[in-house]
Length: 141
Image (cartoon, rainbow, N blue to C red):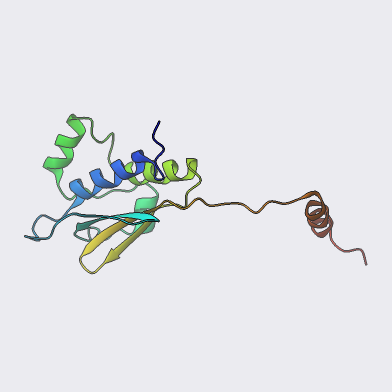
């Protein structure tokens, strides 16, 4: 059985978002997919619509740029609902112990970076747990 270092659900959601939200008025500006050892970058032409911010889209707020393609993708069941793609990506990465996808506007393009490196929590042995417990109780005066 194959094991993917990046959840395919996250890559699929990023690709669907890039296709639906691309600014096709920028003729000749492609949707780019770049695969590196530690990440995948999916980039589309067009920044977020006016008034929409990255914190907004992290909360599920969406501004659909291409209503026709959005409706078609929805009818084909390629997307479930407006504003859910970022949540799908983020939760898929968290379930796989990966960092949340990085979202950024670069020039007139929007990029999603999905990292393949696992986030690890430091191992806390018994001695360190006792030290932390004492620290949380406070130092007696």
